[in-house]
Image (cartoon, rainbow, N blue to C red):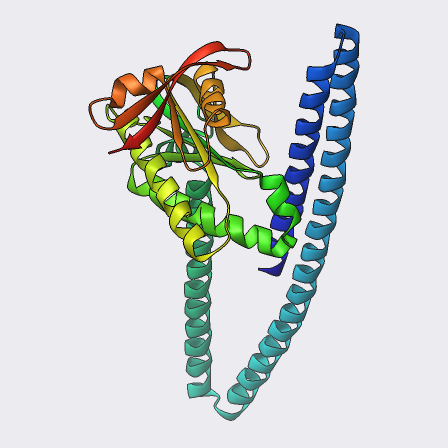
Amino acid sequence: MKLENEKKELFLQKELQLRALSYEYEKRQALAKSDKERQQLYFEEKLKRQKIESVFNEKQVAMDTEQQRKINQAKAVQDKKDALSEAELKRQKNLVTASFIGGGLLLIVALIASFAYRQKQKDNRIIAAEKQRSENLLLNTLPSEVAEKLKQKGASAARQYDEVSVLFTDFVDFTGSAEKLSPHALVNELNECFTAFDAIVEQNGLEKIKTIGDAYLAVCGLPVGDPQHGRKTVQAALEFSEFINERRKSENGFEIRIGINSGPVVAGIVGVKKFAYDIWGDTVNTAARMEQHSEAGRVNISKTTYELVKDDFTCYYRDKIPAKHKGKVEMYFVEAF
């Protein structure tokens, strides 16, 4: 548990550094006066990202090496105990054989059979427990339908889904708030919030995709289609906001921005080692812009999402708002159910 917490803290530190770097170079790119300068800034940022990732990987390898050393040490101690136990069992068998020539042989056979049976039962329980643990880890990483295909076929091809809703959140002035907290307190605060978000996502039929630093990404309508994806996603977003508002009444917690967009996406598994299920497409990018142009405690939705939920929720038209790489985009605040 301690190692897992250390890895979480290390990962969070890396993500905070990458986020800060991204913010820094977005500003510098905006101020650049020529393509040459922007190209140079791009390569500078890329090198710095590689350095951050390299330092993170080295520390993670060191942690894994230390963990393996402790596992090997514990195994060596256990092997020694098992060897002593087995030696003692053999000694007792020899005594029984010497004392009881006839009946003793039968007793020895019975003892050996019993030991083998118990050992087989123990091995089966261990194998079953490890198999269940592996399946639980897979289901915690991938949607159940995708995990099942991966187990059966060893692969799961990327697919396009034409009708989904994508939800993005992040915390307002997260960098400033993070500087006021210790790494341990920061991880605990994020864990409390994201654990609540996970429960809300599951209750409303959404699929969590990932978290990146303080950002949370979820989607509704895949891998199984859902004609109510828009309504369910907005409902989950309102519950996110309600949870954060209630939490702020008792604790000086974060403020949240939420953005939603609906449309087609491509979804699939990325990588071979530490693979992850992810989504891509313009719908995802626009959802991110909805979040960036939202306000603290508000749910900002696109025109396409509004058309799906206008009969279920009261929405406020915000006008066409300029969005990065999107031009002017119609946006709405969701007021109530």
